[in-house]
Image (cartoon, rainbow, N blue to C red; front, side, top):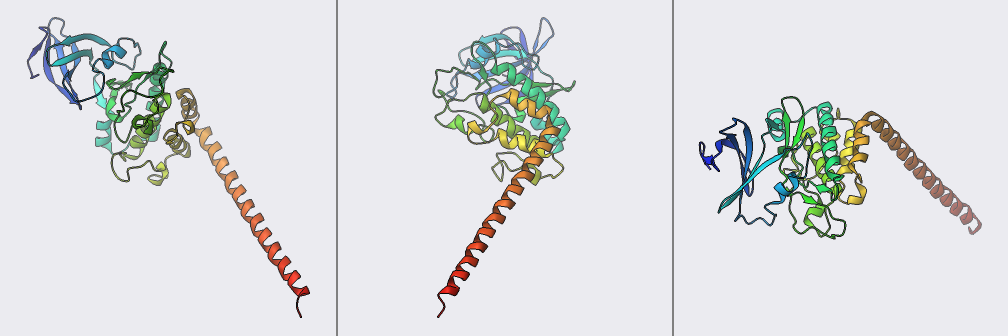
Length: 302
């Protein structure tokens, strides 16, 4: 669509807000009411394996302050148009471009808001919603400092009887390993992607750029806390069983970040002490064994 074009006789296209693999998002104005809307145009003939109606089918079930509401679905021969709340603000990837990386205190505050919306999605009845596309560009910061989550194009309902997903999709670098394997994505998949997102926000290092791996964040900045480093490492374990098993568990650690850092520091000291004791005992054993052989050797001297 072009600027000034009228969609369905009621939405005037004002500008392009963004583009993706199989869609484009426009800012549209309802000409009768004067209200602004985000209009997502999805190509029916794209090569994507994703269900083109997954986003409206999911959004119509949701009611959360951090999520857009769906108001209309329009269809023509080539495209599907989803009319949603227009969320005015700045995507976090644009914040990264401007600032390079963001302060820990601010990122932790955002993380708590993101956890709140993920808890809502993951506890939805009868089937939890797995978001599957957490990344800075899908997180909008409003002028009031509130976080909004957008783009449910590859989300899915979690069904316990399934053994694997029907399609393997996600944003490379942010997507969990199971999104490209034979396992079913679940709440731990979103935990992984959130961990990568926090890593990117705090370090300014995109997972799609060298070194192409999640490194301990204090390697880049010693001023970052031990606690947040521990959280990101645990979130981004390759094995889902080694990650946080629920967002509630993750949120508890985020809220108690200072205590977590202190506890983790004590654990590190204890582990070092244990290692030192093991090395000492091993050295003592070697020394005693060697001394024993020397004593035995004295009896066999001519």
